[in-house]
Length: 490
Image 1 (spheres, helix red, strand yellow):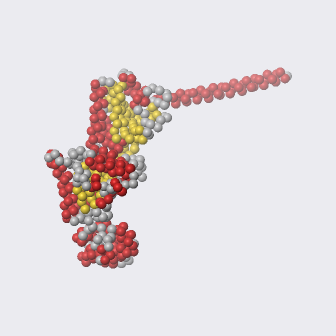
Image 2 (cartoon, one colour):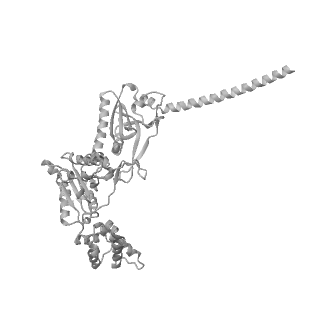
Image 3 (spheres, rainbow, N blue to C red):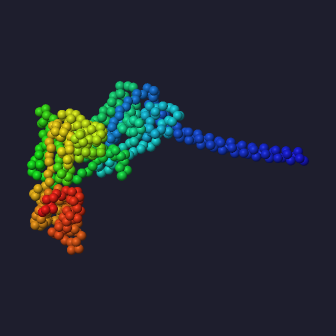
């Protein structure tokens, strides 16, 4: 009986083991099937077989790859050119994005051609980012892409990818894979020529007001690179300056721009450097806004003092998009006298500015508009050498007639009594234009806060505003607002 018991137990264990093996085999079979399906799906997304099939019967080893690199900040013009060229007679056979699974860098066309299972290139949906060009809608630009194309029976491939050094993207790279034939080479050269012409025209940014953006993205989430500004419109009659200052301004900027071509024909330079100087708040920036709107067809480039390290790139942009206006406000921050500098770095920045202004070709259609509140602090090599600064224009504190015009310009949308205008002009002797602007806003605020408020300013409103601006804030407030001692005595 014991023997039969052990025999029964053995049979039972054998049956259980068999069932377990059967389940294990079946489970493994399903796993292998799923793995095969995944492998088939991955194989379908591999780029190398797609390229091989596209160029067939030409072997991919017989393909010639040519590349060009363009500035990263010109992505907008490059994208518009691609859209236009590929919408013509070229047939798009396949279009997709490309990515390596284990790489942070975009693959090249050579990487895509290699048939390898060690980190191969996969086809993915194309990725875009949006650029703000100061237009109604942002422009969508590709981050990387691969086009499989055909033109007049010639099959070729174009790949777009970012490029740079040390992990920093500095440009966009185009690679064209073509059969090594005369037709193929001509096709590649024609494509690159259209890209070159588009960058040279710079249509996306020409005639606009620009600055370079170091941050990768703005608060809107749109990528910038080049920031397009919308300056306020300043009409000619809104520039309140003495008559001789206006005449000097017109001759050296507006009239000079009109005469450029004739001057060039006579062998004279088309570039010009202008220095605006005077106390704070006298209208230097206000006038620049007017000139930016008046010089039609000119690209205005704004360089802040902290961005002078990018001066070389700014000047490259100015030459590319000329005729242009290069504006550098508070230039004394980087171009003060060498004897007052504390480090070699400051002198290097000064030399960079001097070299850029002096190194321009005579036919460069570029205005330099520099501003300063401290002309006496400027380096003599900048301020005392024709060819860099050709004309200095003083922006003085407004005289009585100027203050009268400023009151009318900045007053709210109602007429002021002549006696009130006379009082404001008398009480504001020695103030800046910015002071008049703030005075009219402050007086209007007192007007709207009165319980018996009417639509008109009264003497009490102006008196309250002057008292707050000249006396209650102390001497520092007067200095900040651009008020001199004369207005305290009036």
